[in-house]
Length: 79
Image (tube, rainbow, N blue to C red; front, side, top):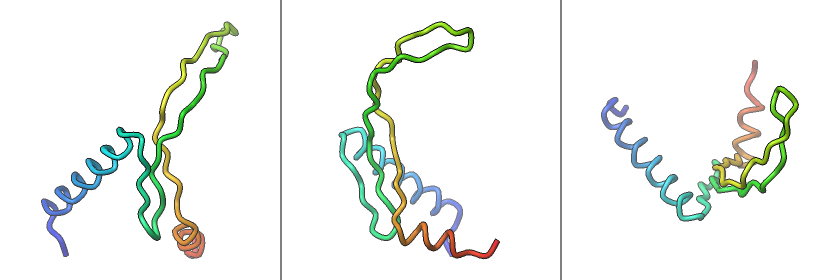
């Protein structure tokens, strides 16, 4: 197996790669795993706990959509 240091290095490269794609507004498809993408959330009005309305500005948020095969694999495991 891989050493802890190797795993840290690979994970760092992976997260940097995903972050790089998303920060450019691109999606990243990993076959058999899923898609990382950026979703634009529109401006909206929300309520505070005390009932006052306030405006939530539009923003971009990261999103992961798992592949069907990954979902099936997770759901087929015995609990």
